[in-house]
Image (cartoon, rainbow, N blue to C red; front, side, top):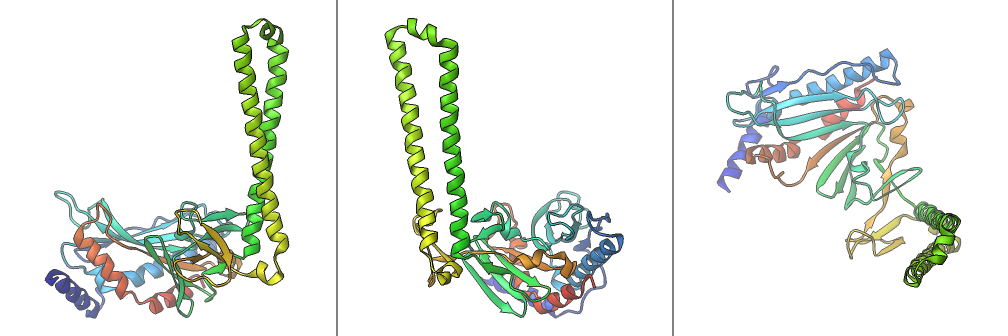
Length: 356
């Protein structure tokens, strides 16, 4: 407890100091490789890199970053992606990386990153495929434990073991509700796909039977009775399996379509609520009131992927909860305290001024 208190006091002392001028003995800024960004003009590319540099300078002026107490070593590492996932929208990342110097290394020569606090520009790590609850043509759906607005254009998404602080340039919501209609139409699409798969299985089975009889029909007539009976049982079992799969697929498709047809306009527009009481798959899907531990279904706001509204659309600060298995204790304590000290209002001001 005394060590934790002393560490907290040390962090507060650092926060009170004036900003250090440039890299210190325990801090460095790694170079930002310059490259043409696919889909952007030279002018737009330069503006995006300039914005990344402005955000980097803001972070580098924070005393807890530019002058950490020993044994913490920090590097500011930047990356701009040449081939963005969204057309004409540049993407990048700035990481406050905690280093682990090996024998003979200094903070300025250390290569191993022990842990990091990443800031993602126009990237939503909470919406990656591995993190999403589901996906349809409109995008990925998310089931965060909590989604709250902390300030003007500042939102907190609690998802699995991370907290995501999202700053939106034009102060629009970070997430939008997934309606019951969208959820059920996606279920209908999947049920229809399953029906097609079953029909294809049946067609493949019929084709196999025709080919087998055409190629081996006469030989089968001469085969021992036990072999013919075994083959007949296998064919019968396959046909029965296909019949059951068809019945289940048809029942699922009819059920979803029936549910959709029974909804009022108000119900269609209501937000989905999921109950995960029984495991990873929801035991119930409803709408309307959604008290904890049940969670609401969201999607990344599509407005944030419209580059015509600005080069810098949103910024995500990811704070992973708990200590990584290989993360050193002093780095974990510093990273935890650093997030608590972040001035998100000041960071938002720099971010919103970028790219103009």
